[in-house]
Amino acid sequence: MSQPPVEQPLLHVDDLRITVGAGHADAVRAVSFDVQKGQTFGLVGESGSGKTLTCRAILGVLAPGCAVTGGRIDFNGANLVTATRKELDRVRSRHIGAVFQDPASYLNPSLTIGRQLSEVLRVKGGLGRKAAQVRSVELLELVGMRNPQRVFGQYPHELSGGMLQRALLAIAVSCEPELLIADEATTALDVTVQAEVIELLRTLRRELNLAIVFVSHDLAVISELCDRVAVFYAGEIVESGATRDVLVAPRHRYTKALLDVADTGGWQHRAERSAATRDGRLAVIPGQPPALGVIAPGCAFAPRCGAAAADCRAGDITRQTERDREFRCIHPVAAMVEAAR
Amino acid sequence: MSATDVTRAAGRLRDDEPRPVELLAVKGLNVTLGRGHRILHDVELNVAAGEILGLIGETGSGKTTLARTVLGLTAPVSGTVRLNGVELTSLRGGKLRAFRRAGHIQYVFQDPLRSLDPDLRVADIVGEGLAIAGVPAADRATRVRSALERVGLDAALADRSPGQISGGQRQRVAIARAIVVEPRLLICDEPVSALDVSNRNHILQLLADLRDQLGVGIVVISHDLGSLAAITDRIAVLYQGHIVEEGPARAIFTAPQHPYTQLLIASVPTIDSSSGIAADRRRELREQAAQQVGERTNG
Image (tube, each protein chain N blue to C red):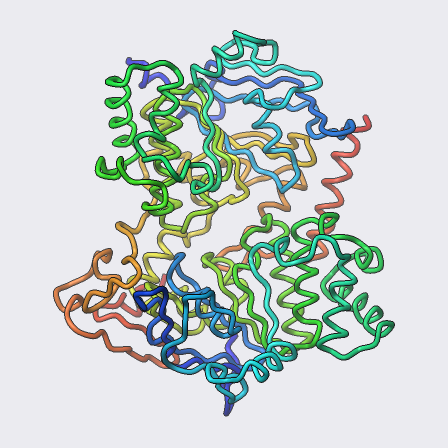
């Protein structure tokens, strides 16, 4: 379900460029997207495609050697790229929360969950000791801990991976942010726990009217959670639109290739096919993405694309727009064939 | 019929056909760690030559402990592990060393970057096991070349170090290192979870090809059910140290019997987004699963 566009998006990323290393190779080029209040926006693509760099740029926590060298990131109308450290701290502490892939590495192993959660509430939220403790227990309950009082007094090593990710989500939403950045937040979790965390993210979105930028390489997870999706390839967004439209009827050849590889027909069918005949080969995308900084003219996906023609390798590929869908492909997948499937 | 054909045929077995000759037979395995903390309960597991068995279960269910016990790295309290009729759990001293050196069981780890020595060249990494087994240098080079070719790696990569190749190529190197000693059994612990979707299929297809061409028995440990569905012949589900369900992959994935298996299968996200189950139902299945396992443990 996509939200109707409002006057000013919560997050507006425009023509973002991020360079990496001494050679100033472009790792992210001309990335633009909007996230509305309460909307879940998915970023999907292979590793090295620029999803995580984009998130880190939004949070202002790019690793040393990486820098935003062009474009803007507007949050509630204020450009974060040119913001002072103090302004950035204010936005990050109150308005943007974040969770990452490996929950155990983001908590202090020698402090209890409750101590770490109430510390955030006291420092960022300005609550007193007692109030912070009460609110912490409420938050632990909100993220689905069955015994929040007990979890409050437990250390990180006493919790499972799923519970740690819940604890981090409690910290991330503790100051009621408007935007949550979740970078591969469910990737390291067991499949049953992943389903629970996805459910929790849906609940938080509903109850806190939270906008979420959700990064994943898993199209199925994106499909379950996101209103809109942007497909990254070699540092660019090659296709974006409403998740249902993009995943049911992809227009860019790369999106189609990703879907073929992920077996959209339903994963259980794989077992039937593989049992019936061992001759069926699994779909793969031939070749590798271009190395960082190697930018050939034309479409970056052309060398791996079965439908590439001479014009794909020459000159700039302009962005095409169809209703609220955008893609950069000269020879796109036919619109109706896929939609009828 | 050649030996390869026999094992190929064995792998193609239908549900009603008799079982092929066993390769790995685990019987009544009980393992405790630390102060008597029970990790595995009466585990039974069989793998035939030319077969891929998928071992699924959540973190802490005992998958890795089971693999370590099969490798002889963890000693069981009771039970036996037999490979080709040889009881591994009773091997000691020189016999155990000789068995290990022969490399009958090989292991492929989740993260190829951490499992490969960063200072060695690909050719040395792949050839190290042969050197330990006492294979002369000239033979080694030939076998390393053919192993690299079998896993689909260009010979030009032999001189590179792990840091200079991609993630998918690294996992191929790890698999080349495992198969160069011609093992009977390959244990792959989350072999594709560190890889991108496209590379995943490359590696899964490679494992299926190795099964068909070499007749090797393969155990794939994973919590990625979609990947397992693509290549496995049989599935065993491990939950709290118990094998709660075991059978042909198609049957397990389409008609799971145990509540835990049902929970697992219903939890897999889908692009078509129609399969999600309510939180209440999930809790119910988990409680049923825990209850059934509890009865088994106490009864």
